[in-house]
Length: 164
Image (cartoon, rainbow, N blue to C red; front, side, top):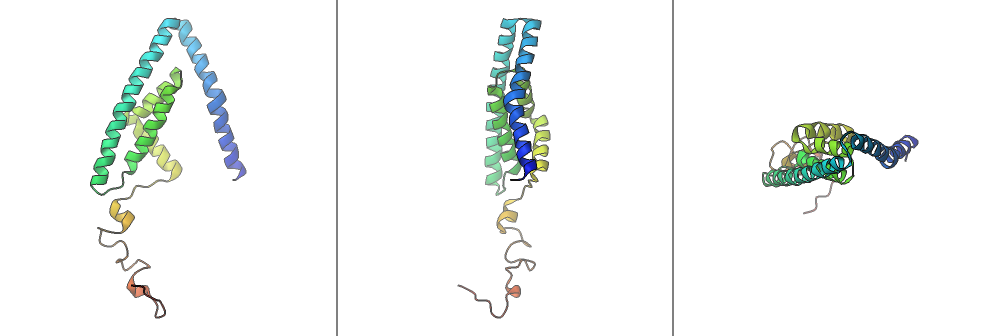
């Protein structure tokens, strides 16, 4: 593990466990002073209920899209990333506070989730492939019968053993 990677992880952990709670407490105090304690608690409960409903709804929609893609013989790349993002949003909704709830709601809202998905794809260089590309079956010009494939019979030498 390189030094740069370790420092990045350490900075992320510091942000998660120290900075985020400090920001949330500051925002909660300011909102409480502006609208009152009971209104602040009511707003937090309302946002949590709406967020939980939205997370559940979007989770089921994404699960259906995963099932449809698999039934078509496709690998559900975008759908799996969406499922991960919805899970992260659900975890953010469990964290008390307005800032994490606001971030979670933007992740749960489908048009803005596309932005997060694109960021994840760029960050991890994820590419979605169809079932035929993944297995080599069902698409002419790919797989073991493709003349460009190293497993093509023309590429075997005279000393190669063919197991049957």
